[in-house]
Image: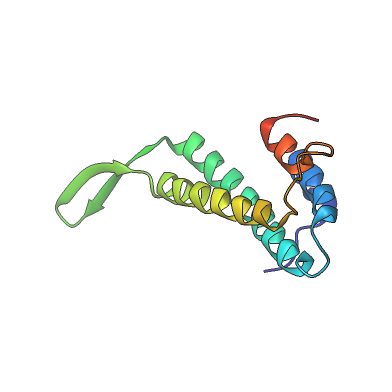
Length: 116
């Protein structure tokens, strides 16, 4: 898997990329790898979302004489990817230095909460 070019990242991930500068240097390679995984999962989720929107959340499954409705495979993959995305984001947050409560608010947490 190759890195996704910065210009192709959504605005939210570009902001998150800037916050990674707060990760201690000894943890930065791990943070970069986690970020690359997040970017890949974000693009994957967009494609899966488009497929579910086009085909609907339910698909007809045929195998021999059997025929029944089931959850669309793209929706199943989307739901799993969302869970992994959130786990990876939490791992990335845990790499940031802990706020001492005295200084400014944690930029990543503010980003996640929707702040600027």
